[in-house]
Image 1 (tube, rainbow, N blue to C red):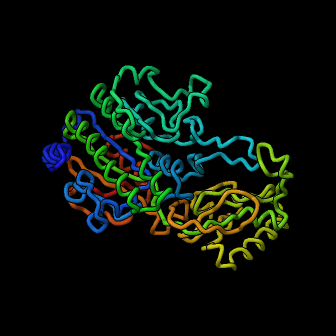
Image 2 (image 1 turned 135 degrees about the vertical axis):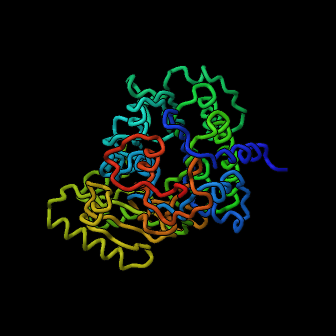
Image 3 (image 1 turned 30 degrees about the vertical axis):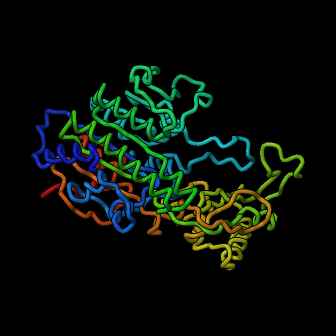
Length: 446
């Protein structure tokens, strides 16, 4: 039986052939992110036996990228902020998922807060233009200036100050009064809240982030049975959100993106154990480890799954720089470590990543970094998945799909740059985002 959501989606999609609405009517854009979605989940769905009818409609009724080349590192938080600012992580300030914490004092604190951003976002520019905004589950939105906010990854214990509230208005969930089915996961809740916000307040710009595919890919690998089931479930949730938006705004622009691709992992390498062995890190006695293991350090690897930034305590120490370079060369020479490339600071910073990094270790897909400071140096871990590699690995390409008035139907946009997404959405919203220098994607019908 064809899903009623698909039938509704197809019915409203006929409106998408209509000319652009009059400029006096304010625009509406729904932007959905499916964390970890490789474009092949949609573009090659049949080859993988996937039933994703709602998202497959973008291939015939909209335009789509073969892939999106992401940022350094290809992980969730930096990518999501690049998609709404149009600039590199080094410019917008969210350079990783977690704050750098070599001594283990921060207990896993991450980039949760809007105040950590250094670049203008789409929702700020939309607000300045008199448009209403909403965000459900989008990363780094605690305390964000969004009209209708359910922040991503927010915990009240981490938000002691009023400007860092995870909800706006504070009683938004009570106002929505959306029934949540017991036993459903976070993405079901996010979809229900987003649909409720759309129906109740009809914001001009809505951000929605789904996370369950990423979790299953980490645990079981991309295109595993578990990941495929999550993808099919998210197709249904995305279809429901799109149908809710189009029911009110048939002329809405619909954008579906992802933050990074995924690679299967069979080996994990403990990079920092090599640095301990080389005397670059000194560990506490095991009984006195406390909050962290490190007693002192001259250089340490900031782990990002498929890659690691090498941070020097004194990056201006030329002797230390040479010493670390020699250690990295020796590590790379052993094929068991799976090191693909080592970038120096200049090349790393040209790619907009890790302004505090003196080197970047990029692993081959199939290898991932492993936490800890003691041997074993390499551990076999068949059947899991990860990301975080340099974005020029094809496995790391993320997704971009668009549908709406004036969008070319069935247009393959080729491979695009993640920094193009924000100026493209800004164009749809008819707003300015001056820091985003790249040209919008040419999705329009000629």
